[in-house]
Structure formats: C-alpha cells, structure tokens
Length: 249
View (cartoon, helix red, strand yellow):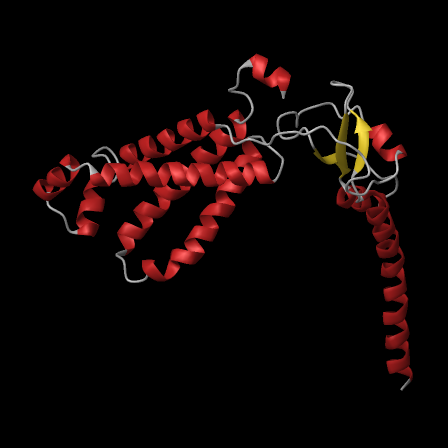
C-alpha cells in the first residue's frame, strides 16, 4: 500500500512539473496568436500580420521567447522581408475583423513558374522512360514490343494526357504554396510531397496488382518529378514578374 501511495505521489508531482510549463506555453500562445494591424515600413500602409505563436511558446519554455511573423497580408510576395514591423506587432493589441482597414493584398498563382515546372516534369518523364534509363524494363513490365511502343509514340493522346497531368499537378502545388502564404524551395518541395502523398492514398487501390517493376519505375519518376515541380514553383514564385507590377502590388 505504501509503495502504491509513493507511486501515485510520484505521478502527481511529475504532472505538476509538466503542467506549469504547459500552462506558461499556453499563455504565450494565447497572448500572441491573434492577428494585429501594423504599418508596413516599406509601403507605409496598414497591413495585417500574425505572430508565430507556436514558435514563441516553444522557445519561451526554454527562457526568453523568440518572436517572428508567421503571416502577413503582403505575403507570399514579400515573404522575405526583414520583419521590421515586429516590434509594433508585439506592442499593438489584436484586432477583430472589420475593426481596422487593411490594404488588399493579392495572393496570385504565378503561371510562368507553373508552366516551367509542368514542362520540367514532362521532360523528366521523357528522360526517365528513354532508352538510356528505364525504357527496356518499362516495356517488359507493361508487355509491349518495340513496334507497339513506336506506334504509341506516334499518337497524340498519350503526350497530351501526360502534359495535362504534369500541369495539373504543378497548379495543385502552386495552390498549396499560395494557401500557406509561404514560398521557397523547401516549402515548395514540402507542398509537392504532401500533394503527392494525398494522390497516392486516393489511387492506392488502383495500383494493387500491377507488376512490381512497373510500380518501382513509375514511383521513382513520380518522386523525382514531384521534387522538381516543388523546387521550381517554391523557388521561382513571385520572382518571375515584371518589376513595375510588383511595385503596384
């Protein structure tokens, strides 16, 4: 009985030790999670920003909180800014929707990086299935003869379907990058990987029963193409635009 009491006392003490930092982290997160209106140092117009409350709470458990922005109404176009408005954001109180007038910021999908990414994915597929890489194994797995493959290459529909699939995937990645209000090669690859995993989960029942070699070849190409698409869209979004248009946004 005494041993059980000691064990329960140990659990209670451990829970108290963990509870205090958790409550402190929750307080930090609650204090800084709401959006705030600040004056942009670059445009001198009012914009809405959001402090990265999770990062502030996590670093606050180790001592002094490290503050940074997680979103701004001018992002992702100006996501690489110096965040000079951060002190004002920490000082200002949160606002409710309609309380302040914020300048409208567009979050467009840049079509040129998407087109480049779609073409790059198609080109990677052409190299991947060429005679220099996996064409022989692919033909064996599918069960095609060289004459049948040559006939298929002359058709327009397979090429059009491949290009359409690459462009559709590229636009999906661009949409995810824009939705998260962030950009960069790493963010693009993460978005591309997430979209690819979602597609695989949906189409997994259709892949059952296919030859193992065919699955390995297509899986390798799909991963390579997804990384290329994510890197191009994440790295080039917001950069391949005319300077005068950027100045007006």
